[in-house]
Length: 142
View 1: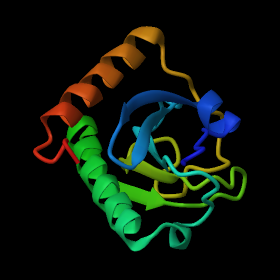
View 2: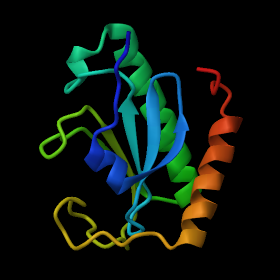
View 3: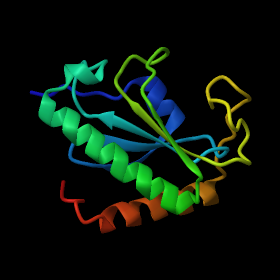
Protein backbone atom coordinates (compact mmCIF):
# COMPACT_ATOMS: atom_id res chain seq x y z
CA UNK A 1 0.00 0.00 0.00
CA UNK A 2 1.27 3.48 -0.87
CA UNK A 3 0.34 6.08 1.74
CA UNK A 4 1.64 8.99 -0.31
CA UNK A 5 0.74 12.48 0.79
CA UNK A 6 1.90 15.84 -0.51
CA UNK A 7 3.82 17.92 2.02
CA UNK A 8 1.75 20.96 3.04
CA UNK A 9 4.49 23.41 1.98
CA UNK A 10 4.67 21.92 -1.52
CA UNK A 11 0.90 22.03 -1.76
CA UNK A 12 0.79 25.67 -0.63
CA UNK A 13 3.60 26.86 -2.93
CA UNK A 14 2.55 25.06 -6.12
CA UNK A 15 -0.37 24.38 -8.45
CA UNK A 16 -1.29 20.92 -9.73
CA UNK A 17 -0.55 20.32 -13.41
CA UNK A 18 -0.73 16.56 -14.01
CA UNK A 19 0.08 13.12 -12.66
CA UNK A 20 2.52 10.99 -14.59
CA UNK A 21 3.25 7.33 -13.90
CA UNK A 22 5.49 8.18 -10.93
CA UNK A 23 5.38 11.91 -10.30
CA UNK A 24 2.87 14.53 -9.54
CA UNK A 25 3.80 17.54 -11.67
CA UNK A 26 3.21 20.91 -10.02
CA UNK A 27 3.93 24.49 -11.08
CA UNK A 28 5.75 26.68 -8.57
CA UNK A 29 3.69 29.81 -7.91
CA UNK A 30 6.51 32.19 -8.82
CA UNK A 31 6.00 33.93 -12.15
CA UNK A 32 9.64 35.06 -12.24
CA UNK A 33 10.64 31.60 -13.47
CA UNK A 34 9.01 28.75 -15.41
CA UNK A 35 9.41 26.25 -12.57
CA UNK A 36 8.01 22.76 -12.19
CA UNK A 37 8.20 20.40 -9.25
CA UNK A 38 8.28 16.66 -9.83
CA UNK A 39 7.14 14.79 -6.70
CA UNK A 40 7.30 10.99 -6.78
CA UNK A 41 4.04 9.62 -5.41
CA UNK A 42 5.71 7.30 -2.93
CA UNK A 43 5.33 7.44 0.84
CA UNK A 44 8.17 8.46 3.13
CA UNK A 45 10.82 9.01 0.44
CA UNK A 46 13.41 11.70 1.14
CA UNK A 47 16.25 10.79 -1.24
CA UNK A 48 16.50 9.43 -4.77
CA UNK A 49 18.45 6.38 -3.59
CA UNK A 50 15.45 5.33 -1.48
CA UNK A 51 13.50 4.63 -4.67
CA UNK A 52 13.94 1.24 -6.31
CA UNK A 53 15.96 1.25 -9.52
CA UNK A 54 12.89 1.14 -11.75
CA UNK A 55 11.43 4.19 -10.01
CA UNK A 56 14.80 5.98 -10.18
CA UNK A 57 14.85 5.45 -13.94
CA UNK A 58 11.23 6.58 -14.23
CA UNK A 59 11.98 9.72 -12.18
CA UNK A 60 14.83 10.69 -14.48
CA UNK A 61 12.74 9.89 -17.58
CA UNK A 62 9.83 12.03 -16.40
CA UNK A 63 12.11 14.84 -15.21
CA UNK A 64 14.00 15.13 -18.49
CA UNK A 65 10.81 14.91 -20.59
CA UNK A 66 9.19 17.67 -18.57
CA UNK A 67 12.39 19.70 -18.63
CA UNK A 68 12.46 19.61 -22.41
CA UNK A 69 8.77 20.48 -22.56
CA UNK A 70 9.25 23.40 -20.15
CA UNK A 71 12.12 24.75 -22.24
CA UNK A 72 9.98 24.57 -25.37
CA UNK A 73 7.00 26.27 -23.73
CA UNK A 74 9.06 28.99 -22.03
CA UNK A 75 11.82 29.62 -24.56
CA UNK A 76 14.37 29.21 -21.76
CA UNK A 77 18.12 29.27 -22.40
CA UNK A 78 19.27 26.87 -19.67
CA UNK A 79 17.56 24.13 -17.72
CA UNK A 80 18.26 23.79 -13.98
CA UNK A 81 17.34 20.48 -12.33
CA UNK A 82 17.94 19.90 -8.64
CA UNK A 83 16.91 18.13 -5.48
CA UNK A 84 17.65 20.14 -2.37
CA UNK A 85 15.18 19.14 0.32
CA UNK A 86 16.72 21.31 3.02
CA UNK A 87 13.38 22.98 3.88
CA UNK A 88 10.98 20.23 2.72
CA UNK A 89 12.50 16.80 3.11
CA UNK A 90 9.89 14.99 0.96
CA UNK A 91 11.66 14.05 -2.28
CA UNK A 92 10.90 16.59 -4.99
CA UNK A 93 12.82 17.63 -8.06
CA UNK A 94 13.00 21.27 -9.14
CA UNK A 95 12.87 21.74 -12.93
CA UNK A 96 13.48 25.40 -13.79
CA UNK A 97 13.84 27.05 -17.18
CA UNK A 98 16.30 29.93 -16.88
CA UNK A 99 16.98 32.91 -19.11
CA UNK A 100 19.77 35.46 -19.05
CA UNK A 101 17.21 38.18 -18.35
CA UNK A 102 15.52 36.45 -15.38
CA UNK A 103 15.50 37.94 -11.89
CA UNK A 104 18.59 36.16 -10.54
CA UNK A 105 20.60 35.09 -13.59
CA UNK A 106 23.22 33.63 -13.47
CA UNK A 107 22.86 32.90 -9.76
CA UNK A 108 20.54 30.40 -8.10
CA UNK A 109 16.83 31.07 -7.68
CA UNK A 110 16.67 30.12 -4.00
CA UNK A 111 16.57 32.77 -1.31
CA UNK A 112 16.73 35.76 -3.65
CA UNK A 113 13.85 38.21 -3.77
CA UNK A 114 10.25 37.32 -3.12
CA UNK A 115 8.14 34.97 -5.20
CA UNK A 116 5.72 36.77 -7.50
CA UNK A 117 2.46 34.85 -7.75
CA UNK A 118 0.91 34.31 -11.17
CA UNK A 119 -2.18 36.32 -11.94
CA UNK A 120 -5.14 34.00 -12.45
CA UNK A 121 -5.31 34.41 -16.23
CA UNK A 122 -1.58 33.75 -16.79
CA UNK A 123 -1.74 30.79 -14.41
CA UNK A 124 -4.68 29.25 -16.26
CA UNK A 125 -3.06 29.73 -19.66
CA UNK A 126 0.26 28.22 -18.55
CA UNK A 127 -1.27 25.22 -16.79
CA UNK A 128 -3.59 24.54 -19.74
CA UNK A 129 -0.63 24.77 -22.13
CA UNK A 130 1.45 22.40 -20.00
CA UNK A 131 -1.41 19.91 -19.72
CA UNK A 132 -2.01 19.98 -23.47
CA UNK A 133 1.69 19.45 -24.21
CA UNK A 134 1.99 16.65 -21.63
CA UNK A 135 -1.00 14.87 -23.20
CA UNK A 136 0.76 15.07 -26.58
CA UNK A 137 3.95 13.37 -25.36
CA UNK A 138 4.51 10.07 -27.18
CA UNK A 139 5.22 8.33 -23.89
CA UNK A 140 2.43 10.00 -21.91
CA UNK A 141 0.95 6.59 -21.24
CA UNK A 142 4.05 6.08 -19.09
